[in-house]
Length: 314
Image (tube, rainbow, N blue to C red; front, top):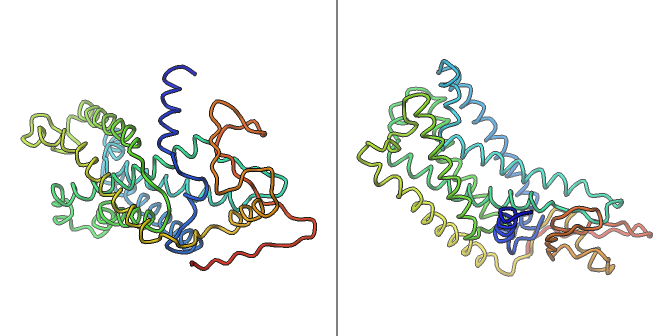
């Protein structure tokens, strides 16, 4: 696999440390699992609508390939796309959980999927703090001086509502952020900086004025943005710690299929690992030839008895 592959594998393990899939992605101690699923569905539909509206307005307003492609050079737009991706991947995991069948006694959430999901959560819950703060402190004139209701709606959604949505997801869910996630986040910041300079080289204009090395604020912006990410990361850690303390002792509300599979594995002494335990397969494969986080699936007993889940919180 090589040193780079080994390093990336090790980083992925650290980013997902302590996270149990799909429990951490789909469960909640704050609200019911069904409410959390509904909340995420509404958020995804909203993101898709705003993203479509924003892209349509951009492409109508700008002419030429370079100007059209400029939409994908704004950190706001890229972060909003990543939020849409996080919600889509989370709902995909929900869909897969609902499709578990007895003929698949062990369902494997691929390790790569778990790492991508954990990173997307970490990036979005931190980045949308920065996007919102920077916009309203430095770039709010584009909102206050706008006469377009559609434009103001897109701006407010991408620089405010997005933060509310990801924070609501974080508070209602059970995901965590690991300090190791800062490493790929810093890589993304560096790549974006190069991406913004590429746009300047092509279009002869800066995506954000403070990225211009000749501007007065550039000497503060370049070291300040990574520092803001660290501060926002610390704030998120405090928020999630407060959430865990507030919900300590409460029942973990899970989707029915996940709950039933977990309970059946415990009561029947199934050979498959209990769902509340995470088995990281490193450098090997499971019985299905897949490497990842192994989760027991639900089996039907010969008597046809069913386990009924009490969805109420303790």
